[in-house]
Image 1 (cartoon, rainbow, N blue to C red):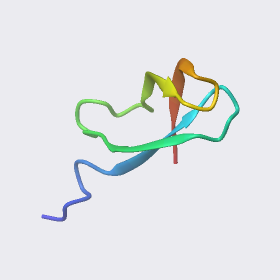
Image 2 (image 1 turned 135 degrees about the vertical axis):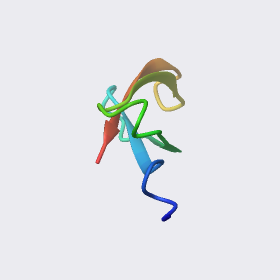
Image 3 (image 1 turned 180 degrees about the horizontal axis):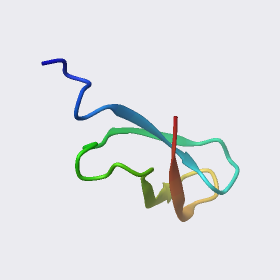
Length: 54
């Protein structure tokens, strides 16, 4: 079984328009839709939504 089958690597891009990204893995069985997480953006120095970028 390949490592990337169930838990692919995804990029989370900031919605603040700074271009800042986080890289993480997600479970495709539990979250088939695109991830949206609220994380810290150091460029604008506050928490903003990060959406999955493919």
